[in-house]
Image 1 (tube, rainbow, N blue to C red):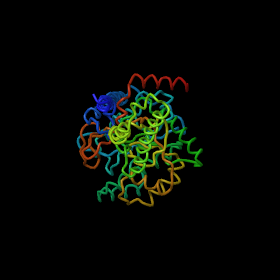
Image 2: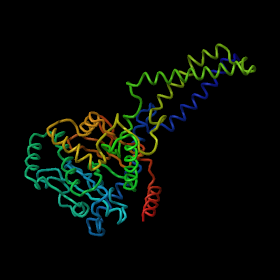
Image 3: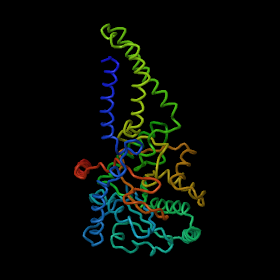
Image 4: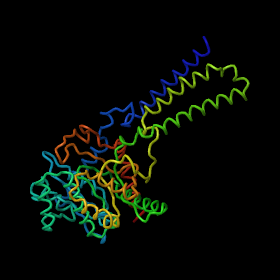
Length: 416
């Protein structure tokens, strides 16, 4: 057999093994050619957490548990604007997942502000529910202020969805500001939080603050608790960078082969000119193609911890804002652009770009977007499988309930 034929067969064997390995490890990366949609969207942890959350909310509604004494000011205010959705409500599981598993000490340091975002709150399916009354610390309404009611009525009449969401965000932000909490977590009402989300979030806020100071900033705009991996793969705008690294990898391999041929005499018999040509024209292109086909999240995953995410961030499911940011930047910006129809996530990102604000994200995420029906009529299949886009964090479903419970217990013991 000709040596080059044997070399090609050996390479094909290794390449086939690599394809099989990547296929078995990159199936949950939406930017990968090996992505398996149905398998990746299986709510392995979310379904478990939703069940826990609903059961807990029912217990609270029945008066079997309560939130006891409260610390003032709280360490974190959680604001949830909620809109009625035809045929389904996610608010119970959202609120239940935020509170299930909290110790009395943890619960005492939190305030929950829930806005049923309708001029007539009776239109919301959860209006008057005992679990909601017992779990929410503040239940504001537009009726609290005549100006709010007038604006809400006008926006609802005009059916300006983008404007309404920003208005509702501003309402819960204002209510959270009244609590004196140093941080406000604004949450959409169709998400689920993992067990232990609180201690991870507070630890991440400490890290974000320290990192902000180290970059010369006195504060940051937000800490993101959820993002969609589908926007974090390979970007066409960076093709020059990818080409440069691909050429560098090829040149590096050729240099290694050349040096081996020069300083290892026994290798000269095998490292012929044809081997160099096969390496440059066949082997390396195939390997580089496989690398990019595997997906950006699989091959270059984000490190655990707090890191900047200034591009390709989506969406507004869970953002933590420092008090100073809300009071001095966001609230004035919301009021000045009250009638803007720009979606809330783009609205915030555009402001951050213009102001040069720091945006941090926590990896792994501590929450999942599970909504199957949006508040403005877009239907989604169960557990976030959207028509026209899949706003889902695939890594979240790898969480293990027992492991999280152990971590949460350990965190409580360390702070007690």
